[in-house]
Image (cartoon, rainbow, N blue to C red; front, side, top):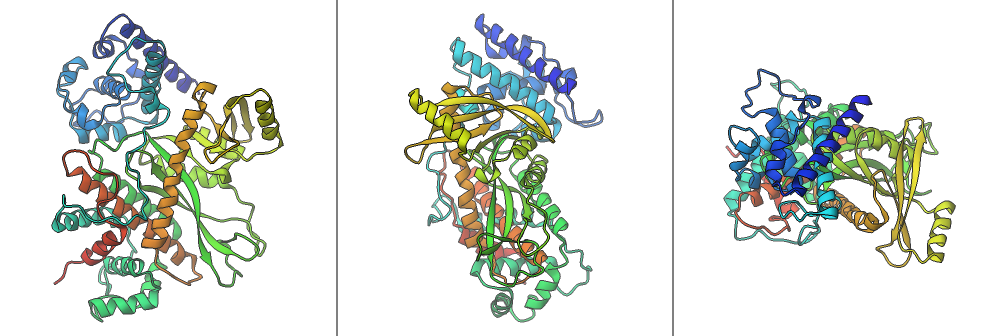
Length: 533
């Protein structure tokens, strides 16, 4: 704890000195060059024998500049003059910048850089002087909205910017990155390679049918000897244990992110959203501990996900089965904070997370503390109880639309200061209450809470995953159920990666709407898994 406190104190000292230099008329570049940055308190994760040609202190100063200005990797790579200013042999290319942030800097170094840089941004905007190169203050509180945000359900067509061959080639690239992490462990001389099972599963998701019908239709399409029968398919999928499926999905995420590591528009740290989705189950629940009761009559499997939302490419970074207490079995009470911990911990292996957005189902002191322990910020709407209602009535009497209440979370997992933000509801009259561990004042509260709207991107994800990529099954085997859902999420990620790579290959601004629909993408994945003889 002392080292963390010392490091963050150093970040604020650096920020204070930078601010003072800029106030005297020194340029931001010269200020970063002259101010002493205590890099000895930070960890360089590249060993001494690593061939990295860029000095660690120089890269720290370069990333301080990037976080203060908000420049993209691509733009930053076009400023060769920064190399001399920060003691670098040359300015790194985009891929090097991305790898440095993801792999060379650890969480503590990233926290040091963002803390110092964002403090400078706030202070300059609040107290001056005017520095055109400094990014807008709103960007470090509420990321700007992407123009033309879309719903995955919208019917879009391939634009004239891309040939059919470009789309086909890019889809295959994304597919190769996505499937590599999955291995059934079957013998090398097995009748069917794993890729044929993946192809069948993709086909089933594309046509929206079950295993027996899907295998039959697949053989009609590809030939009787080409793919496995339905029972063979199910026996193979059962060999993927839940833990292995989750591990395979994590490996796929890492490969998918490596494919876009050099792209400037993929910014870090990211805003993430956590939610739980359901897949209905209509059979007998006896001996089905993973089936939850939604109502007295409805049953469903539940899956939690963590997704990147906001300005970055929309990807699902972690999937977690949800097991809840049910009236018909001996399940323990639901511990949603444990689900949150596993999701965030795995996602942090891939990206740095700045803020996590959750819905009211995660309104829990244990969830708050879990996220604080993981070193991320959170913004979660709170259920309105008597205490909150009394505060709202007081606000009405005092003619206040916004209020901030300081509090402390104190549970067996630890403690931390936090705030309740009372802001006007975006759905009409009334007040919404949010919980956060960020230091947000009354003047910033309403603007800050607007970023919560980004969480609704995850609802669009679920709609697409379940309608465009999820194959049907009536199996009671949870390994099958989990494989179907994880595979559908993987296909969704491949679609999003394909769309991103296509746009990245075009100069100039691109519309945010997808280049090809989910259905077109999954058909190309299915058609191209194994080349024709």
